[in-house]
Image 1 (tube, rainbow, N blue to C red):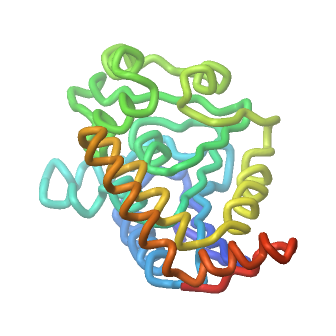
Image 2 (cartoon, helix red, strand yellow):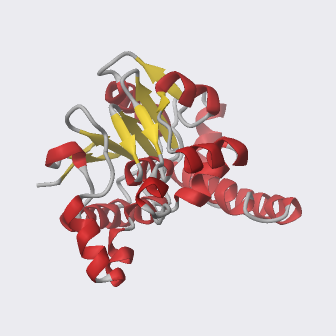
Image 3 (spheres, rainbow, N blue to C red):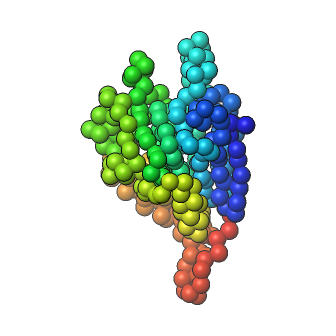
Length: 252
């Protein structure tokens, strides 16, 4: 199977497990879409991990899928896996190693937190083959690392190492080789110790608010904060604080 799926506690893990660099093909795209839907609909899942087996996280789109796109460009929508991941309202943590190229980088950019090991290498070189990114790369990359650096990566197609990616803000942390998944699991435990409704509202406030005027974002923040006051999460948070105990949040 090109995609594996497992759950542990309140965390779901999607694992890229295809041959040849975990490249994205139609089968992988369909499977990822199904698992993303499960994460969104399952109230017992509060956060997700995106990881990969093998030496590379994702070296891009498979040759078969690219050939299919040439024959039928309507398949592009089916292959847009970054869009699918970005639509998950819950926190998504990505662990990467080796090649994180083209659509693989677009997929990583759709996640909220990115952890890389020292073998990770990042590239967005679709222009070398006469194309441009089509799974969100031209939009999410500059929003993550800034316009000037994004344009440099896109126009030159050069490879960025893990330390440079950390300096640019492309990843949040760089860990020893082979340690990215363990660190991502640790982060997922931290995240899921928090109130699940608040986590979703946080994502909504940040991502939706930053795409509009500051005044609109501030109003959204205030509205979401007000809505939280009536939730069981907020009641438990206040009670646990007053009783000096860890909170015990339930599913939505």
